[in-house]
Amino acid sequence: MRTDSISENSTDGPGSSPAFPRHEQTFPELTPHEIARMRRFGELRSYRSGEMLFETGKPGPGMFVVLSGHVAITQRDGLGNVTPVIDQGPGQFLAEIGQLSGRVALVDGHAEGDVETLLIPPEQLRALLVAEADLGERLMRALILRRVNLIQGGVGGPVLIGAHTLGDMARLQNFLGRNGHPYHLLDPATDKDAADLVARYAASRADLPLVVCPDGTVLRNPTESEIAYAIGMIGDQDHDKLYDVAVVGSGPAGLATAVYAASEGLSVAVFDARAFGGQAGASARIENYLGFPTGISGMALAGRAYNQAQKFGAQMLIPVSVRSLDCSRDDGALALSTDCGQLMRARSVVVASGARYRRPDIANLASFEGRGVWYWASPIEARLCADQEVALVGGGNSAGQAAVFLSSHARKVYMVIRGGGLGASMSRYLIERIEATPNIELLFNTEVVGLDGGEEGSLERVRWRSRLGGDESAVEIRNLFLFVGADPATDWLDGCGVMVDRGGFVVTGAQCDTGEGRPVSALETSVPGVFAVGDVRSGSVKRVGGAIGEGAQVVAALHGYLDDAAKPAV
Image 1 (cartoon, helix red, strand yellow):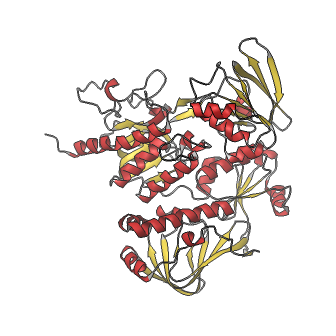
Image 2 (spheres, helix red, strand yellow):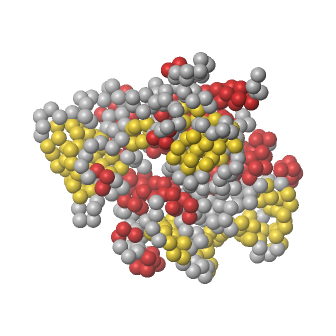
Image 3 (tube, one colour):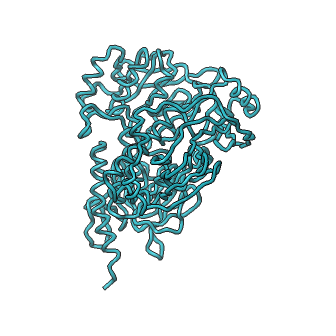
């Protein structure tokens, strides 16, 4: 991948401030009494006319409460365009959810005339949200709604340039969307500026999509990690800090651990190689989770937990992949080696790395991944399937949820199932819904045996065979969804002493033979101070509710271990 820069001779772009849904909740006006309660958490800062309070792509200093004057919020997209977003005056505050952890600003803010503010840095902002519960609720809701509006309006973040049918375009959209980061799309077929950039920077189709960062840097078909570092998604990593808890994986189990541990005063760092939410985050709708009678999407559930974890001070390091765990250091700390080439130290580790999507044994499968073969079904993929016939492989709850979701977009959904029924692997309510959906066709005792592509390398045809009669069919299908289970993501534990079972899942509790004669708590592994929760744990129920329960349960065990470790040796 190569990078270049576009000059930033920014000029005011057309348009006016967008209309914000739920405006009063998104931009509440604070009373003098509320501002007085907030003063102990911040310090006074003054700015002259035209001076920047915060700048796109640079770490934000925290939340500003405007005491006098006005601040103009504008969007700068990296293409040289500046667009007004909104003006904020006395009694209003400037921040969005990213400022809970000091992430980079997604918009610019400059003083219109002289401005006096109260600046509340991220650490003090988190303290304010906890200490002032009623006020904190209003502030937290506004911070979340502002990020939602930025995402929905395509304000802030990078510009993705390429045809919407590109597999790599869907890959990057999914990555940014699942991490709650705004972005903007331009199609070179309809936008002249986009076409000019493609002509200038994309020497071949492999260079697409182009990604233009807010600072003008152009990336050619970047990896997820490359775009994350370029746009400042990953916050500063304190390599010298000894955390109380390092959580590896930010699915439901890891997020629950982070929320409960951080809320009880433990210092927490959370690592994930791709996005928060894990496999559950890709679920179109979860209808059997306690407290949500109308259902909730996996992304919405995970997003709430992600914001909660930040509210209580957990450091979210996403996407940062953990390569190995060293449990033999002389200083007694557990050390995690990351793909950044750095070591992060913790007094305890919670393994919540879940599982990786299983890839069936189909020739040339890898060549179609991201070009018609998908392991999740989000609105991005659903748009690619509009009025088409699609195929979906799998018979579990995730497959059922995806089939129902896709049926509202695709002309027809072929559901390919190796077994002779769904009763043993799928909830009854989903089976009934699938059977009642006219454009879902169930193909039992059937398996996919081949994939064929076109000249551009995208999937064009899927071949499947009956496991009973051997009859083979070939259907013109451009999108194939695979939900055939997952394998535990435990390779990074090799050599550290943590026991796994024959399937590679982490062994915990009474099954562990530590050889030390000490009692082992239900979620502790064979290595003292290392615990496992959620799908990665041997014997877990592989359900969202169970994973969240284990994530909460492990915190008591963490307290017990950390307290014992802090006691002086007798």
